Length: 353
Image (tube, rainbow, N blue to C red; front, side):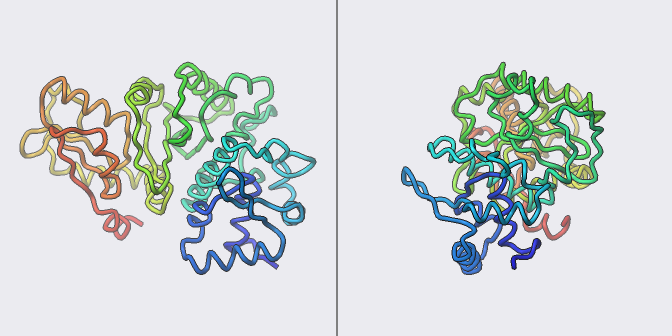
């Protein structure tokens, strides 16, 4: 019998909500190769999952008996995804749809590791038509299927590239995946933002501006073509932070969620910087060389793009401070006039977590 706090059960939970997962998602939940192999073999032998391969892409799906077992295990939690043919649209086998499911599964796994609640039976029913007041004891994540399932309002957001919505105690984040924003329609995303704000305000959730997360896989750097960069700059979101789908991404989500930790880290990094009230370049202070400095440990790509653009127009040099694991990604948007300094993530882990 698989216990609910076991790694094997966590794999089945994500599978129940996403329909298909790849090796990357399982690696996120179970980083140890031998242990991961052992768990997958057990689930295969017990006929709870099956290997699925098409178009050269391998993955794992629940078997019919696996779906029945999950419904018996926790019907209230998984019936929305599995009961009475609810997963019919999820069983599509075209490559585009499968990749979308696998990306969502990785994002869910990362949120799960960061302590975010994924489960419908424990989350406020915000995107259902019955009146519900939003009260959060912890951050929650709603997949694209959940937040776009708003009855007659669904048609207004169905074309959005948003893969989900992350609600923390102090912020609303629309979630995107790098692979999913190759085509972007600004008006659609603005409409999704407006509708999301309207629904949340109606349910009594208090916040200032919506923000966005851009997830990218462990093997990639978040490289956006010039047109997408313009889309990001023009987006309605206050922030647009890049998050890797790995252990560092899990830590970054925890920093973004915890306003006190975020502010404490920000103060540590800015305590030696000088102010300049006359500056026309966005900055968090000036270094000893009197160059504007951007604190970018949240990898807010919208703010980074504006900072670099303003430096170019002013023909000035500047400095960007980010985590060491973000350097390669940040470098993609900077030129020789921008110095990149890094913060050791291991040191932050030891002192803040």
